[in-house]
Amino acid sequence: METPTYFPDKLVNHFFKLPTPKNSKKKLIIILCPYPQGGAPSQRFRYEQYLSALENKGYDYNTYSFLDEKTNRILYQPGYILQKIWGILTGYFRRVYHVFRSYRADAVLIHREATPLGPPWVEWLIGKVLNGKIIYDFDDAIWLADQSGVNSWVSKLKWHSKVKSVCQWSYRVSIGNNYLADFARKYNPDTIINPTTIDTENHHNILTNHQYRPVTIGWTGSHSTLKYLSSIEKVLIRLSESYDFKFLVIADRSPTLNIKNLEFIQWNQTTEIQDLAQIQIGIMPLTDTPWSRGKCGFKALQYLSLGIPAVVSPVGVNAEIVEANKQGFHATTELEWYVSLEKLLTDTTLREKMGIAGRQRVIDHYSVKSNTSNFLQLLP
Image 1: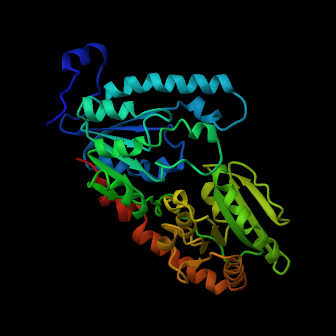
Image 2: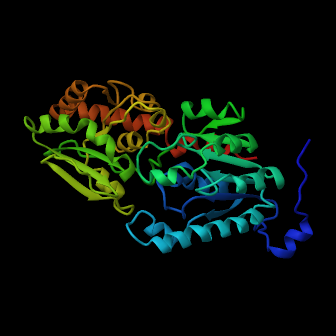
Image 3: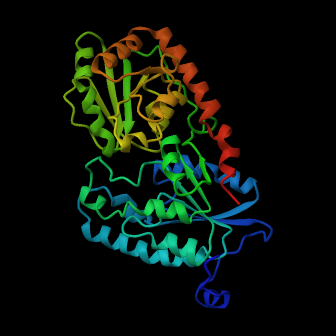
């Protein structure tokens, strides 16, 4: 038995001017996301780069973020406590408005969560009260507490148990890998694996120069994942005693590593691809935990898409993206990390061969072009 709708058309129209598609024949998709457009990698590489495909398929869409531009800019900066509190509070008020804006949508795509803290009241209103078709998209094991140690007190307010409820209320679930799918399918059999993808034609289209000297080993990521670099710090120090190379970190925060040949570049969306293209060997160390198994291998995908061979911890989807000894190497122990990096440091031909194979793997299996039809299957 369907849950009745408690918001009659006349009442809703009286208080809110609802969106109507530019073309009445088009379906309307509402997107609820945490950050403004372009404000987070997960949004950029999971649905934003498919927006033109939506339009080409005959859909209209409206995107509504929880955070406004100003709050998003200061969110991870020290200080600004009152501004952050006000920005988050206004986000909750806007979400009430967004619920009503979703009333006539043909589907509502919710990326990760509608609100950052507390129970899933927005999802409940849309899915159970308004009978809306929720497409629930996530790319991390967000039903678990984040083990990064960053803002751990905030993590306690996340209401992680809501993930299974939203899965149950959803029309369809979109997730990034098999590990996440195993969880989501317990609550919703209509779960589609929609991998995080790379636009190899318009964005990740500058290839690294393997002849560059000194060779650059590189890592990119956010401050919450910098901790993984400590696991191979000793390996990099040992390598630097015998080989001439640069270790490049591209992040939003400088790492605290005792590596003499370390160079840091502040992450910048404008120069992101040019900065990454300086790397000849990419690394992605991870610890094998339930949280890490839910990751979607974005660092590895970025490296391979630019023709950069990768050495990765074979945790979760990493072992699928980078096939051992084809597009790079798998490394678990310090010895395996040392030997793998040494091979790539000393063999230009091997770097070029693996780099070519890596880019082709992304084009064939993890590119926007190869995955567009799969993404469109999510829609009604």
